[in-house]
Image (cartoon, rainbow, N blue to C red):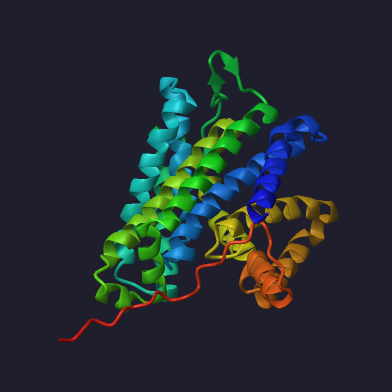
Amino acid sequence: MKNTTKVILIGIVAVVLIAYPLIAPNRYTVHIVNMAGIWILMSLGLNLAMGYCGQINLALGAFWGVGAYTAAILNTRFGAPIWINMPIGMILAGITGALIALPMLKVRSHYLALVTIGLAETINIIMVNEIWLTEGPLGISAIEMPNLFGIPIDGAERFFYIVLVCVVIGFLIARQIVNHRIGRAFVAIRDDEVAARAMGVNVAFYQVLANAIAGVYCGVAGVLYAHMSTYISPDIFEFKNALFVLTMTMVGGMGSLAGSLVGGLALPLTQEWLRAIKSWQLVGFGLAIMVVVLFMPGGVVGLTQKIEQAGGIRWPWARKQTKAKPKVEEPNVA
């Protein structure tokens, strides 16, 4: 029965998503959802690095920017389509994530956050000043929308399906990583780095890998953003973007892939709704974040788990957050 309920729920969600561009009230609404999908990809990357591996990384704007600028440069100068730009942007952003992770191995806690901010700002400065490559503060314009078998994907409604496919694939891959020994190594490192080393886990390797994976996810988001907006500028590297992704991941539920989906949808849509009250937008947005962080430290997903435990309810989508420390078996002594 549980499997039947889950299949029905997935089917309903799939139908709604596929039909969404047709039933959306206007094109701008579809554009907002497209942006939410891009944020979700970045949140998935952060969740794998921070929620599962415990690596505080606030350089997401740099990874996102590398992916976006890669797509913009290749498209405007060489006419490369999104299908070529995507893997190249993923690789370069992943390499950037791995390189940024190397100095992070020497620091811990809040110092780790400061290092990632500093490294991200360094990349930002380089991008702004290398005018021959990035056009400097003016940014890069006239980026082409994707083209599929001669059919131009020139509107938010058509682009929605590209974003949807990327989010679904990204989520499924993240789920495989979490259930793989890589995910178990991440959790072991996050919960107790010393114990992980004692169990033979190559801590440095997996920490670098976690940040590289976060870079890949942000690279995909950057390529999508560049081709969707057709214009990018150094503003993409701003720290507020990384902070926004961190906030949505915390609100949804750190250490839960479902949390990235919830936060990635809830916060962008809430932010857009708060535009109506203009000057009160930041106040209302900040208060909402405070309420969630202070009273629901496990995020929305954590709250549903508490309700489930208190009332004996079993949500069809429920998956436990990875909070428990890994069990360490005592060696047999002859």
